[in-house]
Image (cartoon, rainbow, N blue to C red; front, side, top):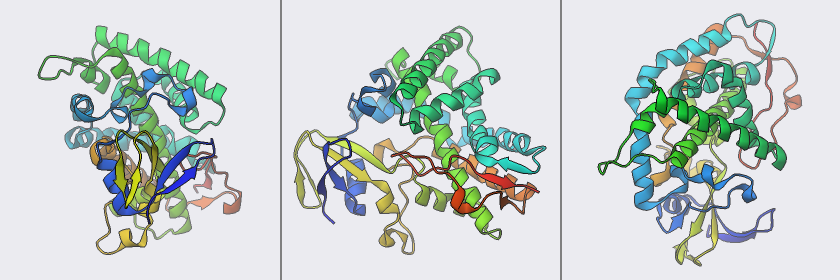
Length: 346
């Protein structure tokens, strides 16, 4: 299916791309840039858009190399024991009716990401509130307040880690240097920290919530890496679609997209395409594709595997505490996510 010119709900004209070959090619095409300063209609300051997701070319490669080591398979493997500990701690003492979004699916990735960045324990609940509001709220005033609060705290945390480095990712990023001796700027450190918090907490929370609901629907469902992969494919943990901006005339599916136009690459349509599910299935786009694919994919998969194994081992008979039709889903253009998941654990 060739791209279609459509009008978005906010009145913007853009090109909608839904076919697998074109979406994958678009994600890897350097002429389709992610670098645009107008984020969320101006509600998010440009300073929070100078992470590697908002860069392209050599600048993107430089930034990605400086931060990537924090998410390597070796680092994640070393962190697995801590993830297990957090999962067990959160489920200790659970009894009766529990909201597994509020009591497990959100606190688990919050604890992991905050430990990764060296955030003190007494500020972790604040972080969960700020990042959830930034990504999920439709209230511009609440988004601005959350961004401002998170901005102030991270700026202070960077200053603390410069003076007192620790065994955490933020300290490692502060010390990281390119071959020419250049390090990350304060703005880059701030933006990368905020991106890690927002993406690392919300994405895992959404996929984990969906997975728990599937486990309730089918108590015989096998937990493990296969379940995690399919959940990532079908629940769109990062975003339903990704915007790119044409820096030159680009041909997509036989249609010429003019320079300056906006392109919307729809990831979920590709991952649900029957052709993508043939044997062997095409790799999913749940964590992106091309130079901007998510650095935290190994950590996210580890958290999800540990979470499902812990829940299945401790609560083999989870049941919904309300009819499924009464579950409340978050209203968001980014993802399909549960607000709460009340269950009986015994």
